[in-house]
Length: 142
Length: 142
DNA sequence: CTAGGATCTAGAGCGGACTCTAGATCAAGC
DNA sequence: GCTTGATCTAGAGTCCGCTCTAGATCCTAG
Image (cartoon, rainbow over all chains, first blue to last red; front, side):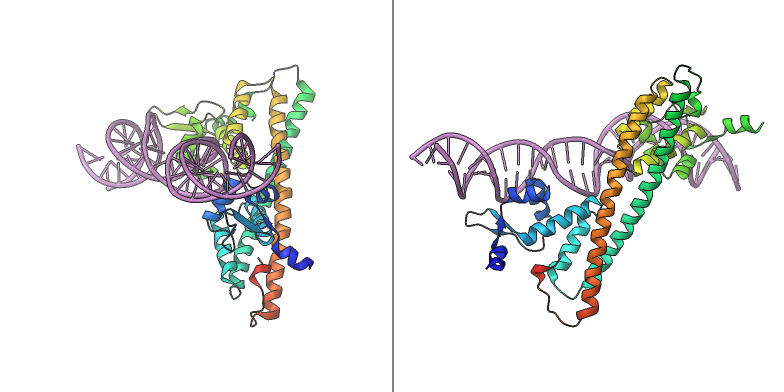
């Protein structure tokens, strides 16, 4: 059965590192920080054996981290998921708060981009108009 | 003369903190890191006396920092400005590199926002459809 | 059987950006 | 003159998110 086969698919820490972009160090660190949804299985020899569920979750973590969610929040979110159904409002609240932060960030970045574009324009103009003449007052520019 | 008066306008470190949103500690720190365009004047008593030029520059710094420019880059940029005309290409390059990073960041944030919105949708739907029944398998959700 | 690389644990170290402390000095109001 | 609050310096401390180390163990290929 394809379904059964898929459920059994496991990965070493190195493979997970490849698939998520995290380092093996970071993966162990994340685990210590309790931000996986379940305890990671181990092989007979004591090596970590990750499932596709773990990998998917970690990929989400990576995205959320990239967008500035602190590890502590991810840990809280993981705890909610781990606890199972019944706290969806809490999860929703966490996500929604983060969405607001993300939107604020986008806003701020766009303003900054406008500032940069304006400055780039100023410099370009200066360069075009008077590259040879040193007639600017350093006090009035930045 | 309004112009002369404006040029003479000075601020204490506390006032600059208010106007830029930086803490007085951060302001002194920034100065140690050489990211002001000129040496800050001092009053007879040894207190810092900032000019409007300083404040404007610091506001730009704040924006660039908010968008993720490292202090080290700001220091380099300040050094270029301090050195005066003749290195506009360098400044342009610095800004342009940063603009690219900002754009990449916006991109990443927007992808993340999409992910969050999707997740929020999933949860909302779950809540609407089956808040009373505990029929989800924790292994298949996050 | 053995050599190599991947993995293990516990814990130390690091880089960035501040933040805070201590002890002294300065400045404005009473 | 005195108190109170802002500022000064030098340097230590903090927080975050990893990263790296050491020394041991496991496993796969030859």
